Image (cartoon, rainbow, N blue to C red; front, side, top):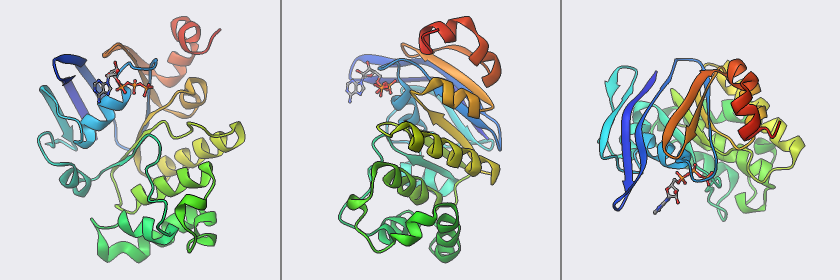
Length: 232
Ligand code: ATP
């Protein structure tokens, strides 16, 4: 579904992604893990088109999307749930969802019904200002908003950040159900154990290079991953 090959990206003269290659097969959930500053957010932003790249290729379902502005990538099926959620706090839940639907306005009702089915709390609070929701509910809203564009692939950057353990588990379960409903998922997560338990495959990024890749199960069992990211 998504193929990234030999991607390079820099801030000014400082290169932070060095020849990064990664693949996400259709219908799968792939985890990207790595230390702070390894380049995870930069990679996600490069895929969604917010961060420029200096070389490399990005293809979605066999067609190149690199060089396209972010909005066109959304209409091709790439939706990003950014780090820190970035919901519109003064707007209602309903209006936040509507903003995610600009790419497929004719399907707004159907997509909204689907989002409410997945997140019943959003239906209940649909008239509330998004800023009054709890952190977990705001994360659900950010995911719901991304799903309003009917994406082929959902990019999630640190979806459980700042959430209490119970809510973090709930968010992870919701991500699994999004995948089960047929959406391909690429997720960056600090909670390495939880994300590798849920994902099909995983990549470890270290200082801008992919250092390991494999089935999530193998990575979870790998002593290097256990030592570096699980403190075992
Ligand atoms: P974190 O888990 O802390 O979010 P990350 O793996 O997502 O980390 P990035 O945010 O992609 O890492 O950062 C990769 C590198 O690029 C880091 O060294 C960071 O300091 C640097 N960097 C990130 N954003 C900028 C920016 N706007 N300008 C300059 N350097 C940046």
